[in-house]
Amino acid sequence: MTNRLSLQEVTRANWRAALQLGVRPEQQRFVSEYAPIAAVALAKAYVHASGFQWLPYAVYRGQDMIGFVALAYEESLAHQNTYWMFHFFIDGRYQGQGYGRAALELLLQEIKQQHPACQVIKLTVHPENIAAQHLYTQTGFLPTGETLDDEPIYQLRLQ
Image (cartoon, rainbow, N blue to C red; front, side):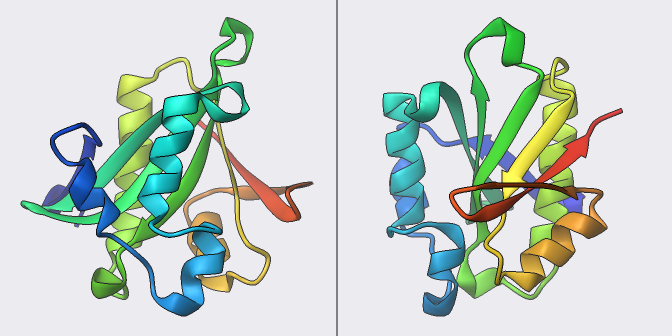
């Protein structure tokens, strides 16, 4: 399915479409405190929140934007081998069709190709979001035993 999907940076050409994406109401707390989710991530990119360089991506199925994810890394050269993944979601209209797993695999390929210095990818997951925890562990992410903002941190070491 990854060949049916593509990742494109969110730019001035497509940012408004990203604002139209969302999750089901009961899932909102799993992805962001605020909606639209992409607006939060784009604001973080603009202000370099947490001292990170932010790279917002849209997930496309053909010409249709169906999801969103933001990568972030510390701007210090000493820390550019660890990237963080934030605000990953598939729009509620497209959930349950395997796009989440395919988009995650596509993102991992993108990181390996476009960011070869990256050795570790970290993310946090809401403690009640069992579906996301399952997706991440199935993809090779492991819990570190640490938390950030009361959410467990998972990481994947790249080969």
